[in-house]
Figure 1 (cartoon, one colour):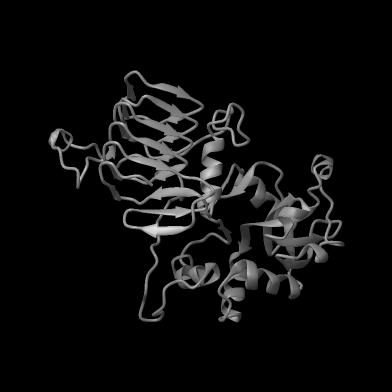
Figure 2 (cartoon, rainbow, N blue to C red):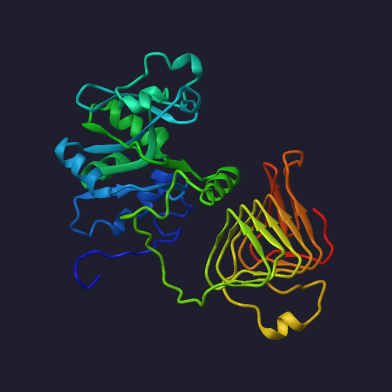
Length: 348
């Protein structure tokens, strides 16, 4: 950014002379990359999870951290008793400082772990504060925690409980907006398809909500004789499908004539198939995209997948988890792999 000291950098997982192992957990990943942060003047470190969907103004989080004079602030969200068993649950005092922590409690352990939450959350039974996996550390605090506990590999399971039991000033930042974990195939599938609902909880169209992405400067999508309902279609697609129902279709997708896409996520392509590729009839190596006469239902089609003509893919809860060449089945959802090839006439 030429107008500030801000920047974005991508740090890939690595092995170095001082560390011969790949990242063993969230805390270990930060420990191994901390040297990149030491030369920067920032005295606060914001740590986020990459497998969550939410809209949060981090400026409010940072302000709360400073106002509480905290060494560590944890983003928390109210959840009900059923969901609480899948999270680390915090207990706060009247000032919002975290007094105690329990990792994934059983239903029998929940009584007594209720916290003060807004009345709207109470009415929904959401009285337990769950960790969102969002942390603000003072830089020195983070350095001391990860180096004084060299065997600790995970923030949620090891570093955070250590900070709380060490009587550090650990604050809770209560977030009451939309938030969901998308770290599993099923949760990723459900969260994406909910975006195509008339009034989704996560609203992409709300005034003042910004989406930051890389501009691709693609042409508008072309559609020929296709019936669509409750679907999101990205730019740059060429669609001749018969119908698309309750689905997400990604950039540069190609869907052939007389095909049906239902309750599916099509991730699209990194580049368009060539004219030669489209004109060549090769049942063993179809062109990128979805061919003619296909039926795709309850599926995730990853990027650059090649699905031939007259292919039938129908997921369902009756299907067992399995892994095959070019595709997998997880929680009843058929996942066609990135660059996967599904030949003409295949039935899944």
